Amino acid sequence: MKPRAEGFAFHVLCNDPTTRARRSVLRTPHGDVDLPTFMPVGTQGSVKGLSMDEVASTGAKIVLGNTYHLWLRPGEDAVARHGGLHGFTKWPHAMLTDSGGFQAFSLGGHKDGRDKLVAPSEDGFRFKSHLDGAEKFLSPEIAVEVQSKIGADIQMQLDVCPPGDSPREVVEAAVKQTTRWAKRALASPRPAKQALFGIVQGACFTDLRKAHADELGAMPFDGLALGGFSVGEPKEKMFRTIEEVAHTLDAERPRYLMGVGTPEDLLACVGFGVDMFDCVLPTRNARNGQALTRNGKVVIKNSKHAKDDSPIDPACACACCARGYSRAYLRHLYVAGEMLVLRLLTLHNLHFFGELMAGARAAIEAGNYAAFASAALSRMRGGESDSVSTASA
Image (spheres, rainbow, N blue to C red):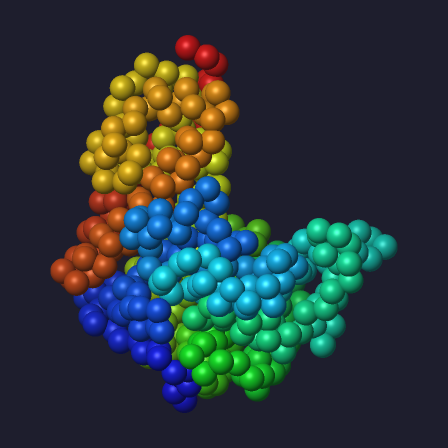
């Protein structure tokens, strides 16, 4: 069954001969996105610390916004009055919004007498705003309505994401409810030029994942996502499940892995057949004084950098490294509490992620993705630890 959004197209250009990696293009009303790609996270309509022009300078062609946060503040109508999230933020390229369900459950969920979050009802999530405690209700239909007004190119269905250690019966119930909500989301009106992606659940039960992928694949979604990973399960188990499941998602639609995003994760999962990624890691790590590079992590707050005149990565073309800002200067800014260092490290990290994905695309085109990924992983193993002394020097 073909997707139905206007202005969208998805084309696989080539497949790597020895892995399941694939090079493709996603056409959207706001431009083409080369895949595989990493989406910087702009939770509240902003990639923290950067202007949208700066985000674009890192090579990003698609960013992610969060429905929960934008719905609560400033509200979907306020965003719509400014021409949707594109006009509000001045981002000219493609955008995706997640449904907000995970945040409604994790940030605002009611708790029972045992201090555990109460499961959603059949209708949706009833929760309290983390901002002011106001009662809110999020259903599959409301999620579509809110995302329609926010106006990103791609919206996500509301789903149920159980914790990674949930027993099978809980996961089975979440899968079934996500399917019912998928049908309700598809039946809800939305703009003709706005795509809708379905979300495959199933935790690390491979059989549940594959069955759910088949079920959602029979529906007219414009893309399919793997949700419910990196929520407490061991990484080895996560990788094993993604390796067995990702390539079974419909090959004629983009495959999106939600919320998973260390450099190692990206390299492994591109090889498993994933096309799209998002994660707060590069921006969050930057705010914690960590630069991610082709040679591993650089912890700029560590005292070893106090007299180091070299840039984070001499081979990097980001605005931070190309300008020649030294590690010593960046460490000084961090220790002094100057916000400039957080912006510079964020620019660097997002540029690194963009370059990593550009390298992956080139390697797939050349038919040597496995060698590329292996060499990249080997280089990155030499990074620093946060445990190194941060005393002044």
